[in-house]
Image (tube, rainbow over all chains, first blue to last red; front, side, top):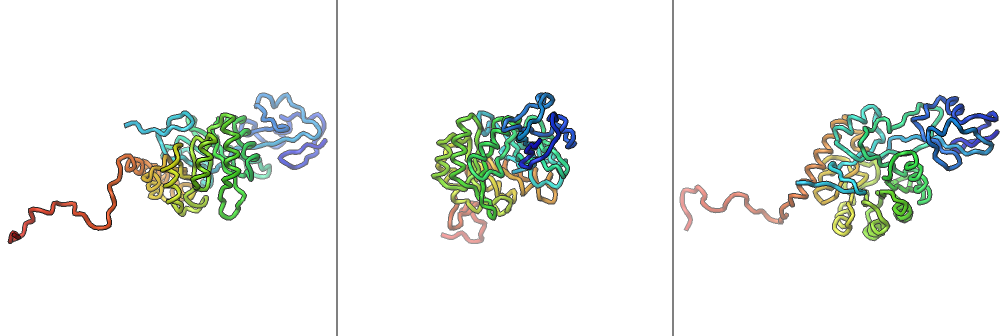
Length: 66
Length: 260
């Protein structure tokens, strides 16, 4: 299935949980902001979410800035 | 004497706001914040780049600091509002520095889009600190829209050129009731002190500290300058004069012959 991650299409296996996807990217969830289809997710929600076709996922972080 | 800056209902003792960009290493940010005494600290929100090492700057900001996420990267009010909402939903609190820029050469803010974003976000309960080009009518509109402060630039972002907009900032300080925070362009502690002597409520400094030879020492230098400038403003500087006025008495000179 196709999922748009940070504006780029990615082909991912069916029934992939969001947490498995995050771990496949080597990311520690607590350091990032996850937004699925324009909704910011709480960290304790991540485990229960299965990615769906055409989902739009944003993985963000706070960086230095003035 | 109590001299606190009140922003968004919070009392702030330290009038140096600190940006966290451009530091040679994030590891020094906690020490920079400590030595600066800053209580309000800015950061930006960006997409993760999966190809490079990922760190979250929030991990380097001590608890107790007020987080001031900026909307850098926004090219219009809609994008700025979206970034602010995401930052709040991500647990950053209610404060936001609005930054709307489409000019890549001088990074001058779009005052019109900034007004629109301020109206929307203030209505949603944000403590809105808009970065703006100093213009009295725009500052009034921002104030009417509910901005907690107005943040005019002293010179283009990252230029370290100082208070090039001095006269326009002076007018804002004179005419606008909400605090005026000089943001961008301040390159040296003396320039921060000058802004404070003029009556600015605070200054926001990033590049001048982050790119100094010793950022920790420079953070302390800025902190001292901001305090000195504020005290000078409160003390009320004496008049300037065109001609000399002796500091010592003009009578009782020790001359050999007394003049008649």
